[in-house]
Amino acid sequence: MTMTHCSFLQAEWPTVHEATAKAEAIAKLAELDALFAALQHRAFRGEL
Image 1 (cartoon, one colour):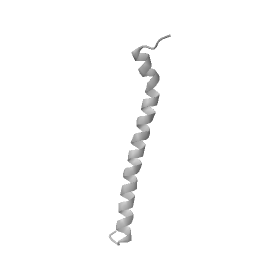
Image 2 (cartoon, rainbow, N blue to C red; image 1 turned 90 degrees about the vertical axis):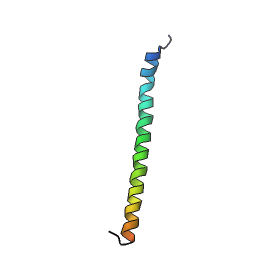
Image 3 (tube, rainbow, N blue to C red; image 1 turned 120 degrees about the horizontal axis):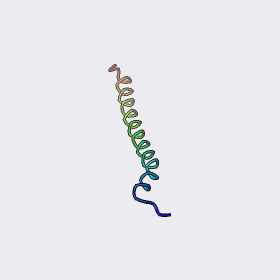
Image 4 (cartoon, rainbow, N blue to C red; image 1 turned 180 degrees about the vertical axis):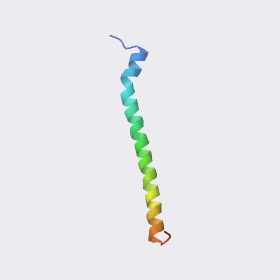
């Protein structure tokens, strides 16, 4: 049985979607880490 282009995409969609979701989550966590670091820096310098 050979896969058609469409069935291949359907089969691969969950993998692609999961990888994309993970990459977006990692990017958001990095952004939150940077914001928290900036907040800590300002707090310890007495700027808040």
